[in-house]
Amino acid sequence: MANNDTTLSEFPSQVFPDDHRQKPNAIDQLHRVTAILAHELRNPLSVLQAGIDLMDDDANDEHSLKKLFQTQVQQMTRLVEDLLDLSRSADGRVRVKRRPIDLLPRLNDAIKSVEQVVAQRNQRITINVTSEPLWLNGDPQRIVQIFTNLLSNASKYSEQGTEIVVSVARVENDTIEIRVCDHGIGIDAEDLAIVFDFFSQVKTSDSLAHSDGGLGIGLGLVRTLVQMHGGSAWATSEGIGKGSEFVVRLPSCEPQLSDQGRDQSVE
Ligand code: ADP
Image 1 (spheres, rainbow, N blue to C red):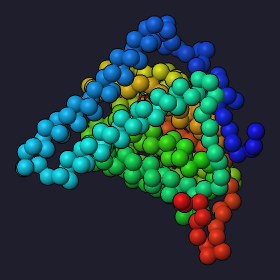
Image 2: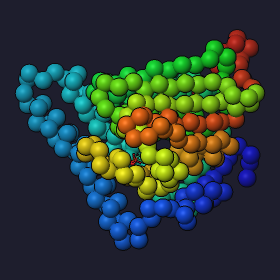
Image 3: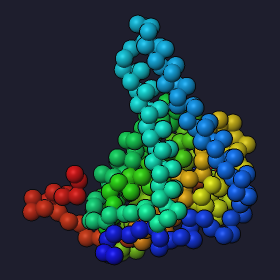
Image 4: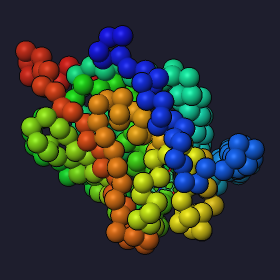
């Protein structure tokens, strides 16, 4: 296999870890996942239906309806893509195709992909970046997927009107560190170790008044993809109600600029 082309089969233990603290039996798990999946699909479908009903009423402007439709379709698309990746991950078919890329345009793409949901929740995203170039050997779509998942969680597990801060810095010579920090519900110290396991859902989020439970796939994929890029990911939190910080470290590479000094990595 070429160096830059990695499949998931190299990381089987992360997909279905043996030491899963909250591992229910297979039937219970299937019931739980089916119920949540049905719920996750029904919500956007009802919103789309309500939007279609509103189209009959001339008072509703096209622009807001379009935004409403876009958010719901994006949400369903993300869910379906996560499910496909989960099924691919079970037999090692997840692939990353790496090449030198500039990290910042990909972070901006991830921010753009959650911006409507974030705006609807009256939240805002602030980004702190160093001025030096931050390049890595990565699969551009997968890098966007990693940060879209982290940002979407940061929004989902925080109250309306809160701030999400993304900080990007070089640590040591050859590593880029990206921190996604929220002021949300936080994570209990004993759950920090399991949030990246597939199907893990910690007590805090179950008891929170959020109606959308979530399948528990996103962070499992984040960890898998980060590791396939030779990096590491972990979470920190000072406890329930005190927000969370998700940290991703990825190995950097030399910037690849054209003769005109332009970034050649952006499509
Ligand atoms: P999902 O969000 O679909 O449940 P994830 O794999 O993305 O699945 O996350 C797993 C669990 O980790 C969530 O159910 C939630 O309990 C917890 N979690 C993830 N992100 C955050 C966050 N930013 N703040 C608090 N808890 C979080």
